[in-house]
Image (cartoon, rainbow, N blue to C red):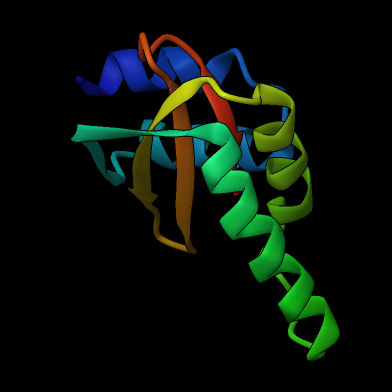
Length: 108
């Protein structure tokens, strides 16, 4: 996946985190898309919803956008997704992309 395709996928996502990740990509941030495997959005929801809950229970402030991303993973149900990261100047973003790599399912 090239930079333009990732920017296109992020540009279709109106979330604050996706817009911030897109801005970092446009500013030449590094990125990586892990194409060697997909995962079920439901499996990822199980993991990240638990992590989010633990953070809240222990007083750790989750990164911006995590709660919205967890909800979006739940809504994606059993869809297969790819993980990607964008390493910006201010923070690192975690993204999950649709199986056809055309849209961002969740970003934080």
